[in-house]
Image 1: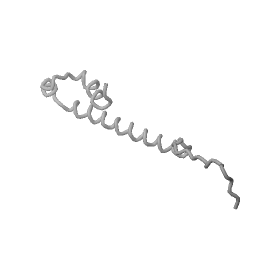
Image 2 (image 1 turned 135 degrees about the vertical axis):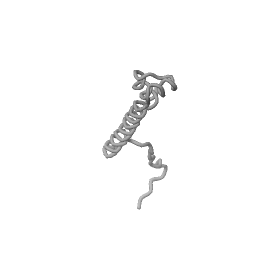
Image 3 (image 1 turned 60 degrees about the horizontal axis):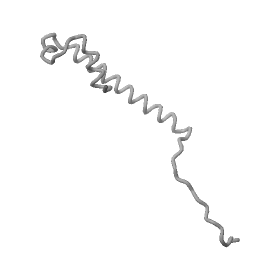
Image 4 (image 1 turned 90 degrees about the vertical axis):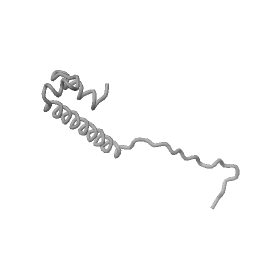
Length: 77
């Protein structure tokens, strides 16, 4: 074995590069999260839509606002 005197040790870098194998995993995770949010939005619309006009009025809502309220509750903004 030959040892070089004064040779600098080899550096290794440890930063994560996205690999081709990780792309489907990220895509599936994003799809699953979007699907869960969409289900929560639909469930919120369904629940609010099932209330009577009197119950909606007690909450300070009208039927026209159900979509906007559900979107804000699930997606924010």
